[in-house]
Amino acid sequence: MNPRQADKAVRFRKLHEGPGAFVIPNPWDGGSARILAGLGFQALATSSGAAAGILGRRDGHITREEALAQVRIIVAATDLPVSADLEKGFGDAPSVVAQTVRLAAEAGLVGCSVEDATGRIRISRCTTSTLPSSACARPFKPHVRSAFRSR
Image 1 (cartoon, rainbow, N blue to C red):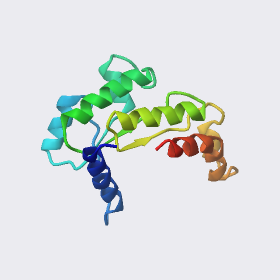
Image 2: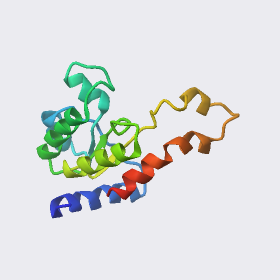
Image 3: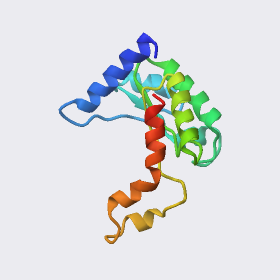
Image 4: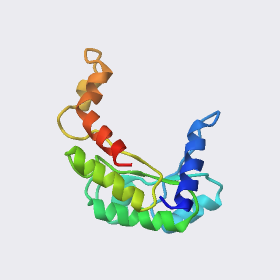
């Protein structure tokens, strides 16, 4: 991590540790990132839906390379910390998710979110009162562990 990115990471972490919530908007390109920075936002977060929309596609229908190309544009557009919606890590295997997180950091991100969208569990099952919430996360734990170790 270069010094500039490390500084952004510290600033991003401080936002999370602050006394209250903070609003993090979703730019869809470099221009919108600059507008949002000019409006005074302290950090930005990409949106997988916006990333797909700008390419004329539906959410979930872009490649990791396309998503990271857009991330690089947004990161380069401002000095704000940027986090990204990395869908399900662009793969089902924990090693693929870890590689996605590594590539995202190399693209300049200081944070990310990765969804549990492996298809092994249904969201509707996880919202019933008969299934403990820890059971919902259990199938995805190897992905999170692998991504964390890739830092």
